[in-house]
Image (cartoon, rainbow, N blue to C red):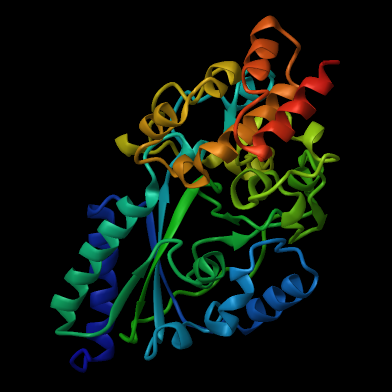
Length: 355
């Protein structure tokens, strides 16, 4: 337990925490209470509709996701941080318009953000603990059942938009989030009263697979990010032609959002693209054996899907690409690949080219 701090001391500490966050490179910090009842009801309705697909873990944790005090007993505040990740000159629209190239979600082009943010949160938590004279602090970065966007919204860092992303009026949506759960009753920030999407439906209209059932409602089973990252089995044949050249994630709803004209380029060197992945050819990537894949994705979020699903995703994109000699040769070289999952998608891709 932390020592008792006066209201004035709590306010002073909150100001100090924001200064430390900036020093650690975070783009923004907010403090949220734990009133997430509205988000809990929304989550349950979403789960009841089956929109989570095979992400069974979304159900397994029960109400721990929406009740922070159940995940970490004693929690009364959550410190939420934002870290911008968009690198300069990755030309996402240009790559999407080049069907022989692989589109990788811009967040995954550089170093995996999990360890980087978690290390900084641990440093921030240690400073707070020292200054407060104790207390409880648990840092999370996609590592536990946490409603990170809902918490960030409660912390006054933006609003959950029609595409279910968190949007910040000054920075768009190209950023990561992280949290520190604490029993320190810091002064909470005030959530925005209005969602500033207005009548705009650009994000809903642009979705390649029509994954949005309406504003603020995403059917993950049709979302390309889910299909290429979370989904472990065969990709729905009806959805494959709609995926285009997107092989790891999808940014279309962010690229269409007018608020992202305010997005800020990251100052983080670790988030700069590695191994030419911002502009790589599909056939080249499909030629990677597992050793090459592991070497080229070391320290990257891409590694989480494994070589087999990497090839599955690329096979779909190659089936959607123009039938060049390089494309056909790449597919034929994997026709007898040991994995049945890969062989199935390669056969589909070759059939798309009449072979």
